Image (cartoon, rainbow, N blue to C red; front, side, top):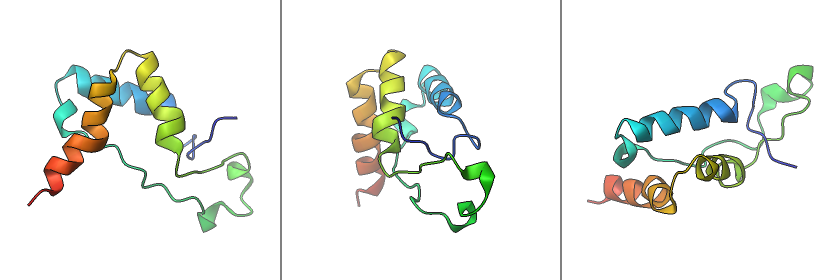
Length: 92
C-alpha cells in the first residue's frame, strides 16, 4: 500500500507533473525536494474527509521518486534535487 500525503490537497500526479515541467524548463538546479510533511495533523482527527489519509515521512521516497523515475527522470537529476541543490544552498 502506498502512503498518502493529504492526496486531495495536491495529488501526487500533479506534484510529479509540476516537477517534470520545472525540470523541462531548466529549473532542476533550483529545486529542493524535502520530507517536511507532518505525520500527525490534529485537524485531520475526526474529520471524515481525511479518513483515508496516511501521512508519512517517507512520502517522497515511496511515492514521488518512483513516479519521477517512471517519467524518465534520472538518478542524477534526483540526487541534484535531494542532495546537491540543498548542499549548495546551505554551504557557507
